[in-house]
Image (cartoon, rainbow, N blue to C red; front, top):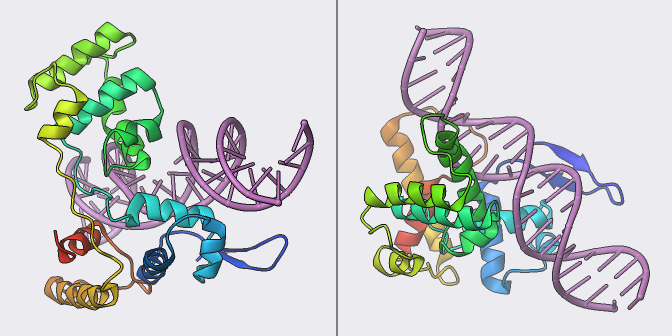
Length: 213
DNA sequence: AAACTGACCAACCGCATTTGC
DNA sequence: TGCAAATGCGGTTGGTCAGTT
């Protein structure tokens, strides 16, 4: 992997995708010591990552309350509403969608919504009334009435995943996790040429399921 | 089957803000 | 009050994969 020597001290800094081992170390460390003070956390945990990288990994992927899976129509509706109100304030928008990260919303906006907005035939809102028109169109095709509020959505359609209790039996989880991966590997008979062990979305989901959801 | 293309998303980078001394 | 370090945020990049030619 890409490694750069640091200016002041010759410390290796890992970049690129996180391995399962690194994730395990980070989860374990935070389970025991809590999050925060990321630079010293990274050092204390023995991770060759920057504090920034650890924080990002934790917030966007490893946090137990991160909600994976497709953005629902109701969430899309809410994102569009909030973006019309606040612009590219992704973290602010993300706070209104529990379990979703600013990075995820930002990516979603750019790859899905913005793409459609650029099409000339579609409504591109430049003011509030245009936006409301678009939102009404969205809402009419969803389960929520067009005058639904954020609170309506939250009460009716959002059910947060129960947090996994990562303090307790994380080691046994990993044993199960690895066994599952091996079984899946055998089933699909796909040659694995990765030297590192990478996580995928399903791993995180199964983590939450295994821990009592 | 191979090459190409576009969509998606994890992770990095740089800058702004906050915090602690 | 000023400075350095830590943190937070938004923009961007690069890798992967699925679909198409």
